[in-house]
Length: 150
Image (cartoon, rainbow, N blue to C red):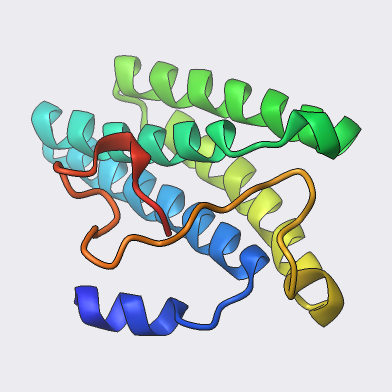
């Protein structure tokens, strides 16, 4: 599966990579919901950790010095969604996880709209700096921790 994912992101623009990260958050939050439904606290915590790792990664890559108000808005969104996911996990609430998914999906869809503009997508958004991809790291691998790249 790693090979497939690596090839699907080859040649992707910066905004496409951001969208892929949001998709990862959503995927892990659905995994957390499934764990809640099974009563599997360890799996819930693992899925939540992976979603939060992505949020930390996105937050760390914001360029507040050049991004201005959009970067500040994204920073506030990441802080709010981080807290919301923690609350959902603490209460093992399917409803709270679903609300977090809906919020992330809304922002992801806005990024998708940006991605449709080839001029914007060919260069990294000024508020977001995407580091070089690691050829050996798989998103969410334990060895890469919260510093993995898309």
